[in-house]
Figure (tube, helix red, strand yellow):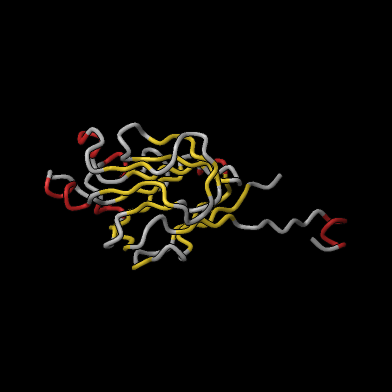
Length: 168
């Protein structure tokens, strides 16, 4: 912030950036077969279709809030206090952990790009479940704005979400 900004109270607020949690494709949210995610009941949601690499990666530096016992989902809180849920597949909790390998544990500090979960996409599909990956910002109301990129192919290097902090 410059000298005049300090005098007149103008603040430059830096956006918080989240990277893609996988290599794949962002689809329209309307393609999610589960209304909890499709209708954004838990918060603003992106829908990912995984590519060949069936691994979920940390979208930011943060702390694992919860790795579900079944390994199908993880929540992470970023260093900027963004609460993110990454859910592998739809109704995959019913697999009771089959096909999922958690690579982190609760309260573990992680870095952006660190592997969090590996999953067997073929097994999930064979068992009749969708492999779509909802990515939810659970505390979006704590921010002034939450913006997602438009559907397209993405890699781990791509910024997929930008959040603007509230004015203090």
